[in-house]
Image (cartoon, rainbow, N blue to C red):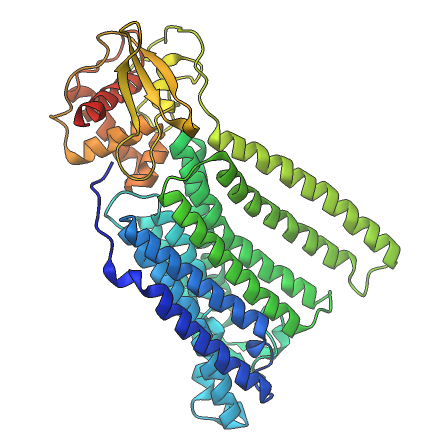
Length: 504
């Protein structure tokens, strides 16, 4: 779909640099912890988790760069840098507090602790942006990306300026709220609400695009959507830790270390998903693993939250009753999540059915171009032409139109290692797409991959209205008028497949 791009050499050595820097931070925190400073901030589990996540993000950045996904590679680099910054700020904050004895009276401890206290927000934004950029083929920064970056950047700044620790390192604000003071609380609350809304924007957009698309495109978008879901799940986990603190009576340090581990796990998950989606690795097993991981994490959070409330010190239930309730919740919620994510994964990776030929009733007007229109029914050979087209990345569709033993044209797909052959009526494939613009070719290639209008918009970083306009122009230039025996989207997909075959 897009021209190949050479990797960025500067990113190829990034994992080594990141590993050395992260290791130095972990050693420094371990030394401060051994000296009795820092509380949970110097706990080995949290520090090591952040270090591993930073290295994983750096590896993902290097691989994305090698595959030509420059935007995703840069964002993954930013994710690695933000995790390193979190570690580095922890070292700085703990060291300045230790040096100042009374932290509030020390000249540099206040700003250092404030910066450290807000450093967990940028990784949430960057892990989402990395996964989203991995499935996009346009060169323009999406408006959704700008909104996420702007809002969460503002949230980071507001949190650093308005939140003050009365006793640093007893816990994060949501874990030990009594240890923190927030000036201008209404402003902080408003920014928090906007930040949560920003974290929901990309998951909603990508899931909608994935479920409206077909086959390979649907699977790739689904993997990216699952990755972006990790950020709001991390926020939910943070809120559940607040519940665990009161009324659950969980120690602040334990909850704060758990949050650091959860944040690190979300970053690693997003980095792996970004590489998977960018490479077009959409095998059912991989997609199933990604979707189930996200679904089971959500189920675990629900069980933990409900279990914490049930087991709170003020609860009237005894230990046996609490154990039974939590066990029942685990079985019901976990089983439902397992079954539901299995069905979702099967939907994302389902191969198109190719039954006996049946004519397609043409649509009137701008058939199949409006954002709400569905593509041709998957039960027809015409729909299968657009549904089975496979790709291994952002390049042209890995399918071709070729004659079979009888001389009739068929569309051959390399889906899951087994060719799917779909009859193509003689004379249905015009010869050239030379009159199309570069953007119209990108739209047509995405259409041939099986993307819906929402899926095309998500990949090319344009609005669905723009996609609709491009499709209308494509149909006019290719001479595809409404009517006839097949849907215009299907006929356009055939034209692109023939064009791709001739380029080989």
